[in-house]
Length: 155
Image (cartoon, helix red, strand yellow):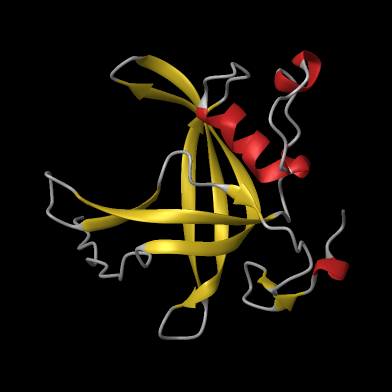
């Protein structure tokens, strides 16, 4: 039996400065890369500024290697999102996703066109993440699309 898979059209995440809430960190496991197999995490962010046509917030993700090295994207992202310059050695190599989930951040989105399919994708620019001073600002929607205030979060 053959299945026809519907093509999905979507608008890329809007380009430029944005603000959002880290709502999930997903362990993607080992992924083959041009540099060998790497353990990857997906940091998922829900926009506080941009909405889809149906009213749901745009979401974007940052794919990072699971690494505690000070030059790794995860290390830099953790420092920026927590508003600190350096992680202690024991903290750098012990990562609990709960330290970031629920954190409100600012970031810059760049557009890149895929040479493979010509589609435009939004990506968080490296080095463009920082913690918002006001951690109570905005509302987060959970996966079901229901609004959740920071007071309703379990942390």
